[in-house]
Amino acid sequence: MTLDRVIIALDFPSKKEALKIVDELDELISFYKVGLELFLNEGKEILKTLKKREKKIFLDLKFHDIPNTVQRAVKTSLNYGVDMLTLHTTGGFEMMKRARETVEEAKIRENVSLKLLGVTVLTSLDSKSLEEIYGLTFDIPSLVKKLAMLAKKTGVDGVVASAHEISTIKEHCGRDFTVVTPGIRLGKLSHDDQKRTVTPQEAFLRGADYIVIGRAVISSQNPREVLLNLFR
Image 1 (tube, helix red, strand yellow):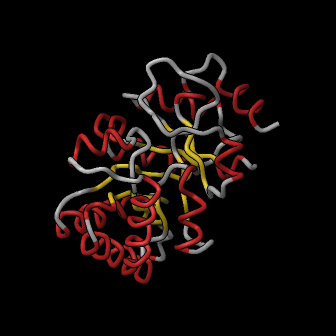
Image 2: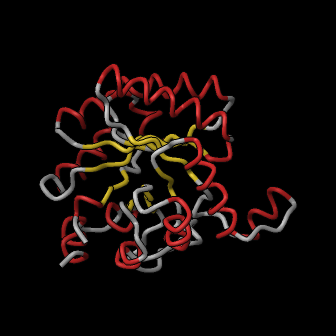
């Protein structure tokens, strides 16, 4: 396990709080996730600041809309120099394909290296949750496999998925198909809304290319020490 495959989630409402963690983990972590809360509060300024500090950015906004709208959103996101960008696989083939084409065009014109990732099934959802939403019974591993294969067919670079489904994804989509795994926990958290969680060691053993760690590190009294102990 290496720290260059660890993405720290900056799940904060303000730039000040986010940068405090970035400062504390400075030489240890080069990759950070910016999600909806931080981006909506701070906008492109937080992205500019992270780039100035030579950090990699996982912009996790999970686009899900009609193809034209998502295509335009992806095009705008390319202006920020982000390294990873997410969209929901349930947006469908055409939405993902148009997004991927936009990224490919930018790679040719501007030499960008962004990875476009499809979100499969949120780690906060289990079979019961999906039945409540759709009124149907789903086998989550089978559903994740189907969504990952759809994403692969569109040409996107990989998916965001629970560690429980990594082996199936790699088997059907190839070893070079990137899998980013959230829902990483070091132990039981109170008020935890994640249902399908694993430890960092389990995620990497199952084949995760990157893991996303949030509360387990950023909510601790000593984030740096927690991270160092984790990978000793």
